[in-house]
Image (cartoon, rainbow, N blue to C red; front, side):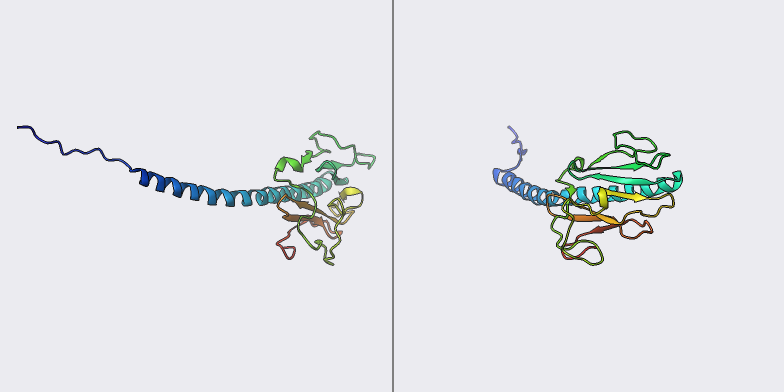
Length: 192
């Protein structure tokens, strides 16, 4: 007498497989949406923090080397660089070198997501007066140069505005002669 084999091949039905694929598609869509909204904000915040740090570096180099240092902005090319003054007190020409008198050249476009000079969707500037006037190129420093003297004090006061393609905005500044560097973020109604 033959014995019956009670083993059965089990697997997924087409309905079960389609249900799992549907859930995965929804999950991927939701996370993709949030990731694409998060990424431009992250890139802008990174650019603003880097600029804040570079302002601090220029200030520290000015104190350490006993001469003036500046952050020079080229708003047309969306670039900026730290530049030190020579023995003659004149700022040397901006170049791509990375030595004691020249910090690295920072290209805002390298951050992606449309990071550039500008105020985005901010409706008021970041000054204490909070007017609705913004500099046309995103930099309020005279001559598009922020300077620190050998004591770390700011020779010029002003603001630099950064934006992304989502309209978010940050402001980096030296609002007083003391040389203190500030970083502010537009939250949709005011600067934080």
